[in-house]
Image (cartoon, rainbow, N blue to C red; front, side, top):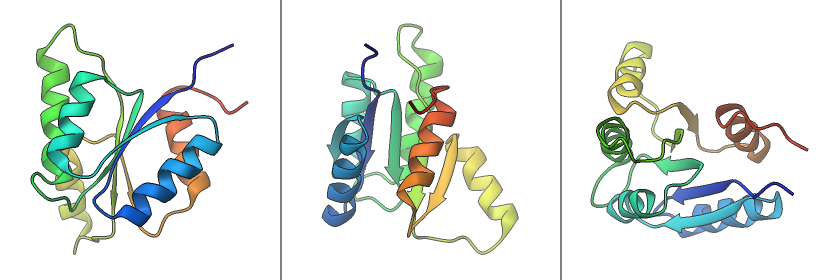
Length: 134
């Protein structure tokens, strides 16, 4: 039997955090959570997930910064695990060029806007972890 994929969800909105944790666990994922950017950064380094869902607007350190720091850590620490990061945000940027710049700067692997569809999140996890639904 395959082990469950570990997903780390970082969001400061308790309702969204709880919804994602519950919905992903029901779909067979092993879910860990964090309520701010610094906690998410620390947890991801201590026990690297297979996939990370990262809110953009977080206290302490925003999702763009956390994503960039984790990608730089993965690049510079040969012993670190690598994992895809998806930004989750309610904040729409004003232009496509700005959106592209932010995505490139943060080095996130995907970006999804709130409100989201759970099946779209699950599909993105499977696509970016090269895992296929059962």
